[in-house]
Structures are given as structure tokens and as C-alpha cells.
Figure (cartoon, helix red, strand yellow):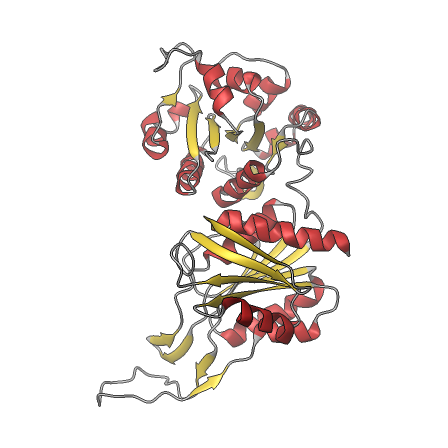
Length: 407
């Protein structure tokens, strides 16, 4: 089933982030068409978006369409989601007032798709009562908004107004694409985790052999980061404890970087008492090197002996201290998948486990897709076919949300 996003790019310095959003959506297999306002073309050349989207970029209402169909109507009918990023005060005001005087605003007016704005502007503009009234008016009519972040803005001011980071925007769009078309208006569903606190772990850990060598594994952290981003975009307060990875996350996520399994456990223990749910997607090393060296080991012989000792079991430790928290683990196996996963549920006091055969094509470490089976503590099993890790994160959070509502 094809999924189509029509993306409106308006004039602001955050246009450079919009290019990243298009790239990420395409990598997730989503069809993207881009409409640029004339002001946006002053910041980024349309060729950039044409190259990334692999589709013509619309910049002129009266340009001759490539097929005989009214341009704004064709794109409006094609869209499952319309994303305006960056969304300036100008475009928000025009849509709120029913003004359709360019290709983007006419397409928005003609569309029955879900429409989401990612505002980006000076903090004083964003806080202006007129802008806020326009935003509230659109929310009341069922439009979606991705809250901007706070920090140092391009204009030199500091405050709220910085466009949300591309991973957050992409995860938000995923949620809109996966929802039932008869979903409640505004952001009722996509903010279903508002007020909840999540602890997510991601990536591998690295156990030192000497200053230049270590023991680790092939975990990229992509699944854990996808869960953290999806939970954050759905309104949760998220703490992400991650091992050494080359990934970034939204500024609103509290990120704690660690190296070893024992460091990861310590970070989790500090956060655990105050959270509502834990998703332990990390793949920490099971052993550490007892006889690690302070200096680089020189090649004096053909063999070297490392003495390994067992690391603490993070998931089992948290399970033994669990009170009202929902605890979700992962089982990455190459055989006897369900048997090993069910044993982990019992041994570690889990509410749910996500089990995947890492030897299967399209599943496992360091790729963008996954295939898994979710098994709950009461024995319910649901198998899912290959999906992106962002989609998988949404499924996992849907199941956690169901558990939370039953408690």
C-alpha cells in the first residue's frame, strides 16, 4: 500500500531541515511531492528537493502540469498527509483566514488529507497573540501541529520557535499515516502518551580491552532511537540511555550517553523509580574484561587470553524492582525464538517482549527494517511482517498504550 506525503516548504532558514525530512521520508519508502513558496526558493534551490524526492517540485500555481489535471487538485487528492515544514507565521495566518493565493495554500484548501504544520519563526512572532490565536483556530478545525523547540534561533534571539528536529517530524508523520482515517481531530491520538514518562535504552555497550580495543556487538541503536522519538512525538517525557552510536535525537529528549553495561545499569537505576514504562531495546555486552590494560597491548605472541566476567543483567535488575512500571524487553535470537523469549518474560518479570530472529533477511542489527513477534506476560502472541523500525516503534507503543489504559 503506497503512502503519500505532500510537503509544503515555506520561506525560512529551517528550509535546510526540510531537505533532511524529505530524505528521511523517502528512505522509509514514502512517496513525497514538494510544493515550495516563492520565498522558500530564496533559501534552498528547488533542484535540491527534486533530487531528494525524485519528483518534480511545484513552485508556480500557473505552471503547465505534466499531466492534464489541475495541479493543486491533483496533489490534494494524492496526499495522505500534507506536511508544512517549515511553517511560517504567514502561511499559518493565511490558512487560518481562508486565504488561498499560491500553490501551497490552494492545495491545502482543496485537500481532505490530514494536514500538519511544523512552525518555525522568531520567538516574539511565535508568542504573538495573533499567531497563537491562528494556531488555536486551526487546531480546533482538526489541523495538527508539531510543537517547535526552544533554544538559540537563527535571528540571534533565544526562545521557542525552532522547527522540530527531522526525526521527530518523520515519526509524527508516521503516526498520522498509520492511524485510522476516522481518527479524532487535532492531536488527540498522536499525543496519547502525554504526561507519561518513558525510559528507553538503545545501542550496544563497549567493554574495554585496552585504550584502543574493546568488546562490543553490531547493534546500531536504530530501534531504540525510533522508540524514543516516537514516544516523544506522542507526548511522552523520554529519557534515552544509549551506548556508543552515531545517531542524533530530538532536543526535547533527555539523552544520557554511556559506554559500559555497568554504566548503563547505573543510569537506568537512577531514572527507573520515576518512570511509567521502560523499553529496553539496547544490546549491552554480557561480559566485561577483568584483565583490561591501561596501555595498548603489544603483539608479543600469536595468542592472547582475556579473562571475562559476567556483567549485571539490566533487565532482570529492573524487573526485580518493578512496582507499577510497564517493562518491555527485546529478544534477539538466531534459533528457538519463542521459547527463549517466553523464558525471558518469566525470568525477568516482563510485561511484554519483542522477539526477533536476527538471522532473518530484513531483521536484526544495523538495518532500517525489522520483523518481530510481540509476546505478552499473559501468553498473547502477535507476529508482524517486515516493517521500518519507525513503524515498529509505533506498534510497540500502541501495545504499551493499551496496557496503560487497562491499569
